[in-house]
Each structure stands twice: as C-alpha cells, then as structure tokens.
Length: 338
Image 1 (cartoon, rainbow, N blue to C red):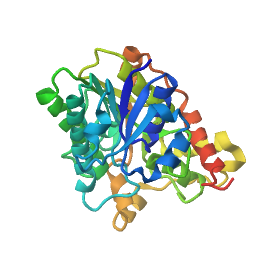
Image 2 (tube, one colour):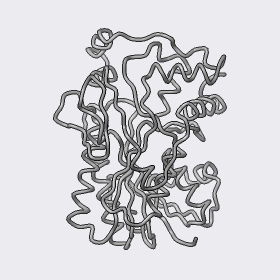
Image 3 (spheres, rainbow, N blue to C red):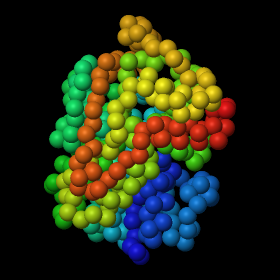
Image 4 (cartoon, one colour):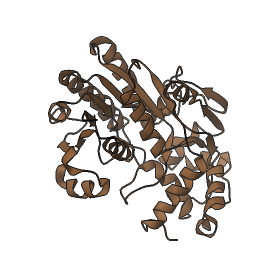
C-alpha cells in the first residue's frame, strides 16, 4: 500500500490509534494538530515511521492549513471535534467549531479530489432526548434537539453531522461520505493527555466519584473504533452510510462493578454507593455537571451496532476488557495511584 490518507486531530484519542493502524498497513498519513509546538512529543507517542507521517497546523475555527494538509490524499477521516471536560456556559463554544470544522474539512477534501470521506460523529447525534425508560436505537434515529436538557456537546455532534450531510448532498459531488457514531470510548491511553471520556474510569478509580447516579452509556474500545474507521476508509460503496460503534449499554454502577471485578485491590477506592435521583436534582441547582445528566436519569439507551458488523465485518472486544485496560494504563502512567 502506497496510498495517502488524511486524519484530522492527530493528538486525539481515536485519531492516534487510527494513524497507527493506517501506517502499520503501509499508508502515508497527512494529519493536523492545532499547533506544531508539540510535534516532537506527539511523534514520540505515536511511535510510527516519521518518513510517512506529515503534520500540519490547522484549527477547526480557521481556514489556514486545511488545503495544504489534504493535498494528495485519496481518503480522509475527519476525527477532530471538541470534547469538553466540563459544561461550557455558551453552547456555541462547542457547536461552532464542530460544525464549521467539519465543513472546512469537507471543502478541502473536495478540492483535493478525495474519493472517500469518513466523519467521526457520535451516538450523541442519535440517542438523546428521550428521557426515562428503555430505548433502542439504530442508525435511522436522530437526537431530539428540541427536548429539555440536551447538553452543548450533544447539540454540537448532532448539528455538525446534519450540517455535513446537507453539504455533501448539495456540494459533495462524487465524494463518498459516511459517518462513524461511537458511544463512550474507553481502552488503553498512551499519556496523561487523554480523552475526556476516560475521566469516567479515572474518577471511579481514584474515588473522587463517591456515588453513582442512575445514568449510563454504551461502551466501546478505542482500538475497535479505529478499526471501524479503517474499514470505512477502505471499503467502497458506503456513500451516505452511518455506522453505530458501540458495545453494550452499561449503567455507571455496572462500570464500577466491572472495575472491582477486573482489578481487585487496585480498585479499592471505587464506590459501592448509588445517588438517588432526588439528590441529583438538588445538586443540579448548583452544579452544571449535575444539570447535564438530569435529562438522562433512568434512561437506558441500547445502540444497535449490528449494521457495522453486517456490512463491514466489524467486531468488538468485551466491554470489561476496555474498562480494565483504561484503568490499568491510568495506573501505569501514575495518573491514579495503585
């Protein structure tokens, strides 16, 4: 393989694993970071053939750098998108860069003659806004943005994917476009600069999350998400497709239980307590993070990944392995004391 692929957001969690997989299979990769100041550290972390990895400075909020980075690429994966640790006061802090960054990447890809464009969206664009109860979702579903309690992050992923699909329909020409919609992404981390999704495991492991509210997430391994991107990049005939990337849905309490079962004494600080809904509602009067989960209390969201498995032959590893690998890597890095 001597082809060239574009991947945005090289310092990101999913992007790093995707870059490694592409290069292991012989691709040359052109990729973006917001600043080249940390290029040496990033190259050391990725540990790939420097001769086939080309870094360019480009930001989701500006045009500079995108055309140069995309030049000569046959396929493109737009993975970069803001993932906050907290809840921003203004939703546009997330919506604008997510939406406009996707459109910038699409325009640059069309100009460069990219044949296939894979965008990392999220189940946040599929499975929110239904409230309490047990819900089952497929790729045909969309998050209901007009419902109360929809967080800025969920808004940003939904709006960005819809904007990208509308643009492709109007202006995409012959470029094949599809999305990958992961749930909460866990698994091993390489450095202390890790995804906000892994904070779920960190806060349970270090004891700072002292009790579990009645919320949950689909869980998927970062290595499996990268593999699904790889399959989408290299499989023709996927124009317009959408692929849920998720393992089984787990309540926060189940994730805590899995940590104790998998890590034994190393999980001694993981809580065994639950938070009643009324206590979350009181906390929401003062805490933006508590307010952000109010609309999902008691919600069970089963996100069906059978389409990706049927069309692309995708497989997932057990969610317990992903949770344990995330925890063990945090301990190995010294983020959490053993």
